[in-house]
Structures are given as C-alpha cells and as structure tokens.
Amino acid sequence: MERTTMRVALLVYDLFEQAEFEGPLAAFHKAGVPTRVISAGRHKKLQAMQHNHLGDTFQADDRIDTVRPNDFNALVLPGGVLNADQLRMVEAARSWVNEFVDNGRLIAAICHAPWLLVSADVVEERRLTSYFTLQDDIRNAGGEWVDRPVVVDDNLITSRTPGDLPKFNKAILSWLKDSDPVTRTRLVP
Image 1 (cartoon, rainbow, N blue to C red):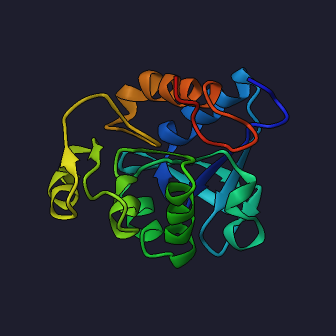
Image 2 (image 1 turned 60 degrees about the vertical axis):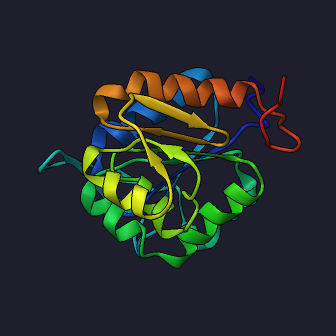
C-alpha cells in the first residue's frame, strides 16, 4: 500500500463508540495509511462512549465543511447509537456518502453507522450487516440484512459490533490494498 496516495476519512458526529473509532484508527496507523478524523458536528472536540458510559475525548483534524470527499479513498463510519442518529441528519454527511458510492470509493460502516447509508438512500439492492436493531431499517430501505461479522458488497463494507473489529479492519485494509490510488476504486481481477 502506498503511504502517500491512500487516504482515509474517519467521519463522526459525537458520542461515537470508542472501540469502533480507536480500532480502525490504530489499524490504519500501523499499516501506514494516512487518516483524518472529520467532525460532522459543530466542534472539533469529540466525546467517545464506551457502550453507555462516557469514554475518552478526542480532537478532530477537520470539520466536514473544510475538507472535500474526493481527497479520500475511503470513508469509515464508527457506530454508537447517539453518534449515528445525529450523523444521519447531517446533509453534508449524506452528500459524502453519495459521492463515495457514485465514484466507487470505499465506505466502511460498523454497528449503528449504516443508519447514515439508509438516510443517504444507498442501501437498495445491497447486502449489509449492522447492529441487529437496524435490520428493519435496512430491509425497509430495500437492502438485504444478514447476520455476519463482516459483509463486503462492492464498495460497501459493513460490520456488526466491536467484537467484529479485527475482521472489519482487515477487510478495509484488504480493499485499500487492492485499489487503484489514481482512480481510487477497487481493482477488479
């Protein structure tokens, strides 16, 4: 993987699940993949959750209105019910999802984060997984929900819970490794 050409945007609102934020971030750092934390909220100071308890605080690198989606090869969406519920209502976040889908670039969403995919209207005729409570939302939006640790459907990678993070991170890094850094899309064998 070329360190200078592959870039990941880790997009959150606030009150995200800490493990689903730190796990991918650490995996990308270890693999040498430049990653920017993007806040879709009003502030760059971010509060994580550890399930239903406050976790650590973090600082975003940028706010969503100061960067462009086409600067990134992948969009990673940590979950957390409060984060995901707020994020799905941000018009710019929905626009980013549509831009990534339309251009064949990777979107990876875990736990409650697929709510943003539902609100961006990109799950129809796609296979996804998520936290089990989102299955009706995904099905009602025309997607196929399956109960698996990780589901890869073209340029969408979805996962269920923090327990699935090792497989989720591996799937993202594999997708990036097999991508063309110029077109930012996956190479088809």
